[in-house]
Length: 203
Ligand SMILES: CC(C)(COP(=O)(O)OP(=O)(O)OC[C@H]1O[C@@H](n2cnc3c(N)ncnc32)[C@H](O)[C@@H]1OP(=O)(O)O)[C@@H](O)C(=O)NCCC(=O)NCCS
Image 1: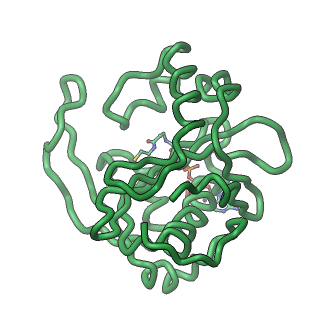
Image 2: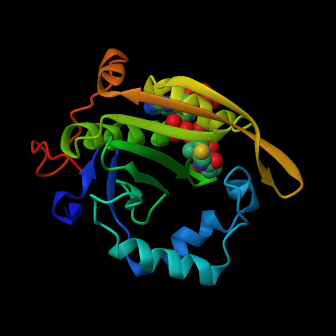
């Protein structure tokens, strides 16, 4: 399926919309920072890489095959431009397993935007895309991301010890996961607010 017609998603304070090539400057403003790339196991983006990424993301709205990834720009409803991104990757179409990710520009962190965006994307994943289990992988030192997972009501399922190499540092990761029922129990609105939500399509 193509989820383009189901976008944007909205939350009380945010719009989650498709990227456009014109987002390159806003994207580079945070993806170009070493502090943002610190736990992403890759270098900070160059300006050219941000241009490529914005253009690539604009076209990626397919959902149904293993590896399909949709990234959405997180925008405040009360000001222009974007403040970050959330993503959903279909790890297994057969088992309806998806990975969620989030990044918020440093100047907009500490306001609950990552949690608000992720809760709505999780709702969309469960209720509209038919995802059965949603998981996040994060560096154990990424305390901001750990707190987002825990606010969402995700369960810490695994602690992988020195399973990756980040420059010259051995990286260890947590895997957090949730089923729809877990998020409902945490009191989050997993129904989401997608335009056109209400379909229950298996990915
Ligand atoms: C991970 C990341 C998105 C977390 O951002 P964040 O702003 O801390 O997360 P939230 O948007 O959910 O904000 C939560 C904070 O806002 C505060 N807050 C303020 N107003 C709030 C509100 N209305 N609702 C909820 N929280 C609110 C909370 O108290 C919380 O602060 P605390 O963690 O000090 O207790 C951010 O650190 C980031 O982008 N890092 C770089 C990229 C990255 O590592 N991504 C994850 C890879 S796994």
